[in-house]
Length: 141
Image (tube, rainbow, N blue to C red; front, top):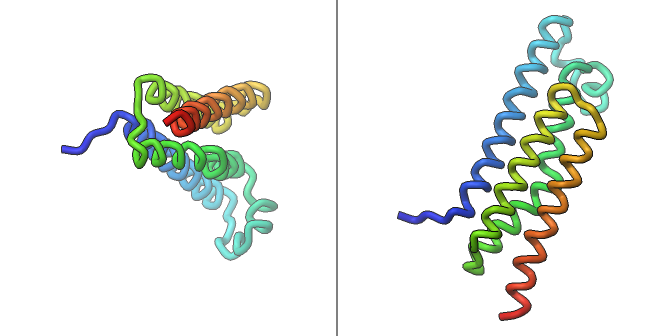
């Protein structure tokens, strides 16, 4: 059986993305039903942004999960292809996932900007550390 510990954080990020997507659609459908918004009023992103208010925050968070996390997915896949995996890299990957989970929780609940920014910054620094670690390994081999 194929098992790499570095895959678990990757799968956890995918799960987080799916959960935010589900939360976004539950919130969006609830808002549309309660405010009697016809789906055609949301034909474009601009129209949806001007009409939907409650579901805008989870939608923004969902979009965020396709920005910096893309570099996370790439570094994980690169580490697998290059057979680079150590305890430090796995711990950094889990730290990234935990901080992105915290970012999503803050964003989708009370949405305090500075708290959210702190989680974002910390996750970005962890991601940079992951790239430095893999790059250093590649450059010294």
